[in-house]
Image 1 (tube, rainbow, N blue to C red):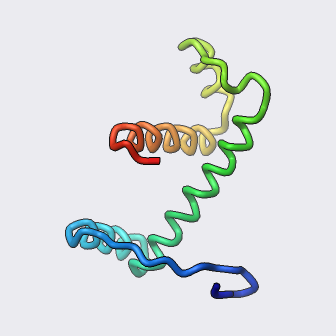
Image 2 (image 1 turned 60 degrees about the vertical axis):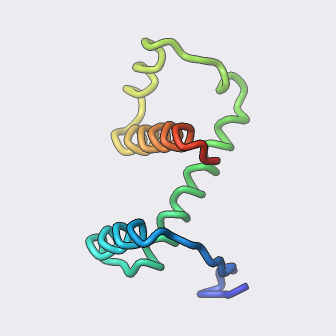
Length: 102
């Protein structure tokens, strides 16, 4: 376990296909990061979003399905930033499901 500025960290080795690494490296450079920092930041963001969703899923009534009108009203009630985060998370969920990721 590595500590950086008082934050406990674990080192993990991942394997990527060469074309995936190349694409991620290009995205990282465009975002102003090196590949390692970019991947770490993306994974941290995903974990934080999932933490919020886990907390929300424990609230009574959150597992009930919404009809289209209820869904639209809910999205309209969110701030623009929160709505974008929610849309990103929902899209990511569709991608995970499509590719059988967990």
